[in-house]
Amino acid sequence: MGLLLKQLTFLIKNRVLVKIGREELSSDFLAGFIIGQSNKLLCVESVNDDGKYDGFIFINKSDITYLKWDDNETNSLLSIYENNNQIEQKYNIEDFASLLMDFKNMNKCFAIYTEILSDDTFTLGKIIEFDQEFLLIKELGNKKNLHEPEILIKIENITMIELESNYNNSIEDIYRKRQKNVI
Image 1 (cartoon, rainbow, N blue to C red):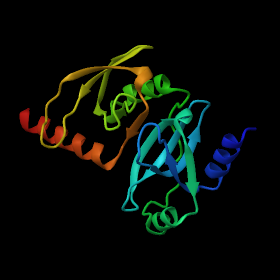
Image 2 (spheres, rainbow, N blue to C red; image 1 turned 45 degrees about the vertical axis):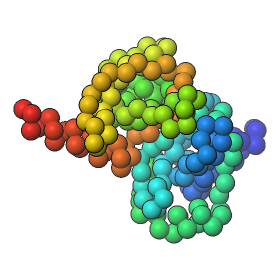
Image 3 (cartoon, rainbow, N blue to C red; image 1 turned 180 degrees about the vertical axis):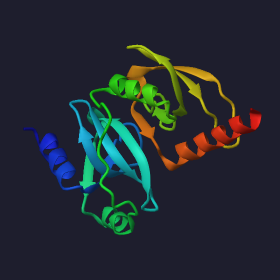
Image 4 (cartoon, helix red, strand yellow; image 1 turned 90 degrees about the horizontal axis):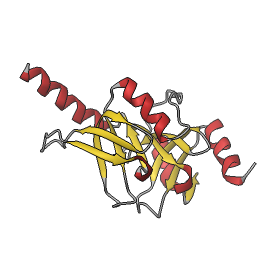
């Protein structure tokens, strides 16, 4: 068993709050509880800067540059964390294509990050269709710009997927309310 696998197993089993660095993609770290892993991906129960549950994050294990825990920042977040319910990893995290199949069946809004192209590039939307190479999404705009273009994304450029975050949920609520008012 390699050192990364050994530590990930420990972190999952002991429900340890960690900071995850992906320095080649972003200067920001991710914070949360690693709740599942496959050969390629990690599933993280995300914790925001205010110590609140913030959905799930799915990342490539190969993008990890560091894992850090039991420091002042993670201990402070842990002391104010507001979701004491253990959340089980319920998604197929074999690879991004398997995960996308789960999302398509759920018809949920999620964010796709393509940080290889730019460190702040993400698309929020719902799956229309996908194959082994590309993903077609009905993009949901931000709170100011509620447009709904379609966007085709190359799956190999996906670096992170975010599901059920507070921001994603708020945008989805706005769209749901808007659709009610239109009908």
